[in-house]
Length: 396
Image 1 (tube, rainbow, N blue to C red):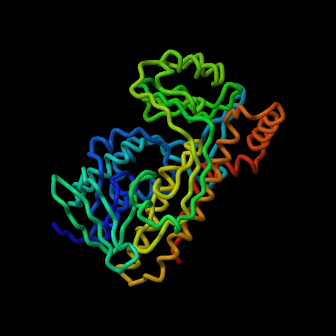
Image 2: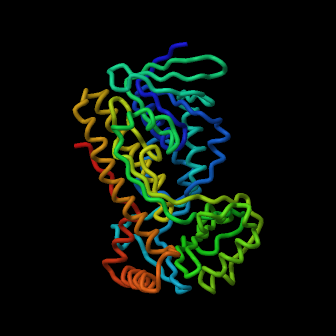
Image 3: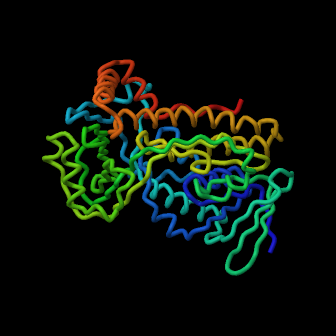
């Protein structure tokens, strides 16, 4: 069975849905293909800190109403080193910018509902997706759905299908320019229906390892602790997690920490990855298909949103003004922002985590760097500017 659209979007995560919603509002036809069910997509537990640029883009897509009602505006963030607690105000260093805490699952749900209202087509459980003739002027995608083989002819393909997706793998291997750093630890995360221990996020550096106190709402908390990359989820239980978290956070916070049953527990490995081939032929890579960052800097979803912003405005220029000459700008703009976000996430990871290969000198140097950035106006400004998100760059 044959179908036709202008933009074929592979993947119905937040980047694919956000791009699809923006394109639909602009009158640019698109179809989303997703390998999993909608329920599975919504079951993924992910980040929850949205930069101001991401918030503005979600509003522009028409899917921001619930985010504006329920999202928690944070004008600062907290740090702890060996139990000593510090606060950084974001707005004085960023011309009034802040972040919004609103779970990625909720962003995805809102975008799904907005797409349904606007009549956008999303095909879930699209199996065996393959990209064809991506170097030609007439690319197409084949897939299986409900026992039938389908062909989707299109002008361009947006690969929003994550690190393990088919989009990047469809680019010839000898054309891929890739960079990767794998960290020797992961994050063990626990979500619970308990009030957050602090009004702002708290990033904790401790000799026992890193910890993060986060939240999804005034009644739902999300906590993380650094664990060796050899640990399995079976090695942990709720009681052991809470006990270890209390050891790593400031004592006054440990005293008021409300514990409870876990809604979800999982271990996420940490890596930095960049594929500099973000555009090849008629394929554009967005989000995790092109780059992965450690969650330390809260940049993953926000980096995907900046890719969406650039791709969306490029497609509008192409279809409204025939500006195909701007296509090389996509990779140029996205990579400049990607590497800055990768650097910040890497720096936060190196600053706050305990490396078992590190000696006494390294720990003292880490402590000195922390002291400088927390107690220096320039240091706090650097953290705040990167944390709220660097501005999106215009196509021209």
